[in-house]
Image (cartoon, rainbow, N blue to C red):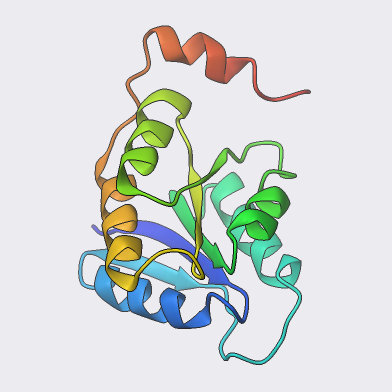
Length: 144
């Protein structure tokens, strides 16, 4: 059975979303929460449903893309059970999974190449949480 992954973007991240989605779709069941064009949109309209799907277990992990990666990350992290890390290089995606048990990442389409975006997604999805000394820290992240 394929792992289920959520993906969403705003207009600035649309092109990268399509590339990453197509790259991953043979190995993963990728649920696309939009946007579906380069027309200007409000990113929370797409990020909240994607984050909710990870939070409730419908999808295992999630990938978000906007111009800077910041807006989508901030929005996703408003969800109590989401740990979304801003990743601009593959090594950060690895550490976000290993040390922070990140269940979503955001990427800055305006600052990375399409090849790097695919590599970040690949590293994020192929890296496991180390647990151990990191578990206690992760347990302290949620406020309630």
